[in-house]
Image 1 (cartoon, rainbow, N blue to C red):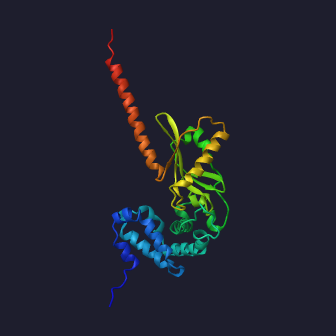
Image 2: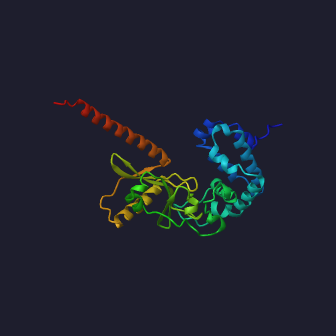
Length: 277
């Protein structure tokens, strides 16, 4: 008699943090695959399985994922119902144009859980989940981010949809900015000063849409056009990244700090070396 196939929970439990990070690029990839092969009627069971696994392995540091699933049975069931209603529409849209990306299943499920657990995120719009076309009323242009010193060193989310670059605070998911619809690109954008020079950093990091790195060229074209249309004659360097911009910001902040300390030390040495006649 052959050995029984391991259950999903046994597969999950047998993975170390190194497995998830190195082989699977994080737990999201694994949970995404498990959700993808889970039929609608088994979704609640899969949700409880994921919750139990996250609790059992909380020492592996999955606090970000854990907060989504740390809800009571009623909320989980409500989220499953909402997810089932929207799964085909948002995760497998028909007639998707080349170069556009749908919302992936795990992140749509998380959106549903945030929505039903509104107390966890009262500022969320999640309009796309209720087929409402509401978008955040405040949005920014690349020129505004570049010209306003108050916005330098701050990271914003963006989506490129129907030729329009929609930029807003990190508190809004990419799926909210795009009302759940396909996009041509998405990620993060920030204006960061280094060596007294402003540069625009753009990342393709988006869990919802996972755009190609090449799609950032489209974003760059719109940034340059917006700057020129607003009278900018010297276009800043635009740098691409595939990682979170918080890492770039932390690295540059440390470099700037080191440079300032070096200048201060040099100045102190010069002053201290002067002889008084």
